[in-house]
Length: 187
Image 1 (cartoon, rainbow, N blue to C red):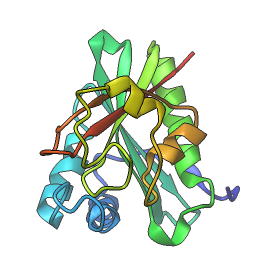
Image 2: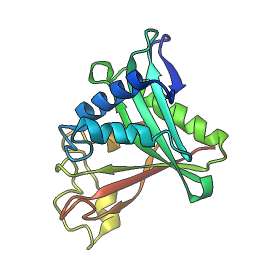
Image 3: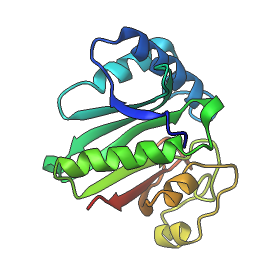
Image 4: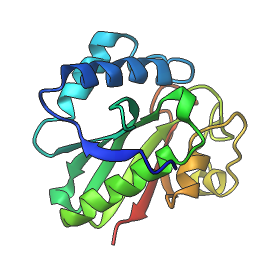
């Protein structure tokens, strides 16, 4: 990652930055998760919600203040656990360590707040893994143990930065469309 990139809290009064994040959020999720934030309004609502109590909103910016990525955190289980939601990196800046740096930064932020675990849900709505399109109930653990990435599903990224698969919710997004739960220790 370039040394000129820094992590900051999203300023509550920076409407231009919020707009940048919202546009990137729609663009980043459009292809594989089109219903996540289908329009600018829904994305802006997510960005504003990230500023509420019990939430964290971390932004990777360059020396000109351009948004390169964004990670949100949601406090759960009395602060013992935080959810990483969402995570995105500007398409032109992917594969440069920014996503990894955002996860590390969020992990440190929640550690400072007394968390023990950071978790993320990573849906498979588009048949990107071998967990999609099958009945998982017959052998959930067997399916998880033999998961394969078919089309660049983000669970592989999360594994590279320290998350492990801790479960799956079959049919979370409709028949054969699971949510893959991943977690990592914070301490």
